[in-house]
Image (cartoon, rainbow, N blue to C red; front, side, top):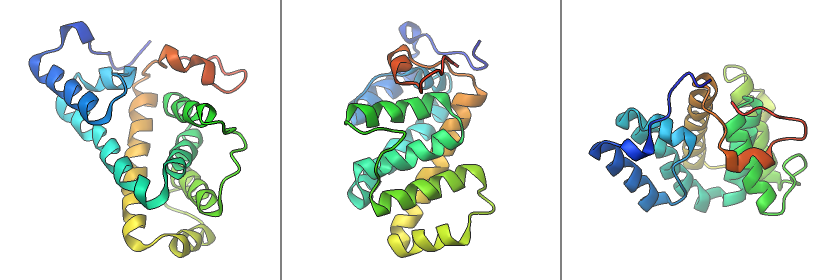
Length: 181
């Protein structure tokens, strides 16, 4: 059972409806279970939807696939069911194997860094830091780290809030994983 309730999308207040409409207009997609949960407090919804703003800024800097692999590495390491399965779906639908994505050198650096951020943010190995510094300029590192912070926060909302997995993602779970929240 969810710790945080989902907002009934058929009974949104005008403020909630405006926030949902703005999100769909700017970024497309649909109102997922996480978004429906966050709509219970519009300022929280708006804060978390800034993830899309940073993602849109990162794509020209590192590439769409790199952002997806970075997000997946963070979410998988955090064992966030919703986020990890969401990024598995993107990888699978693009023809990649999320368990063996064959990353470029830069993507591999991002995946190592993402896992380290999720696992031990206060003790990221020096060789990982050096790889990130030699691969990405300071501005890109700042945007990547801010994005990673929002990714970790999104993992937290979904995991601690026990937000249920969207049914459209069920078939993208790892083999044997039957969790739905």
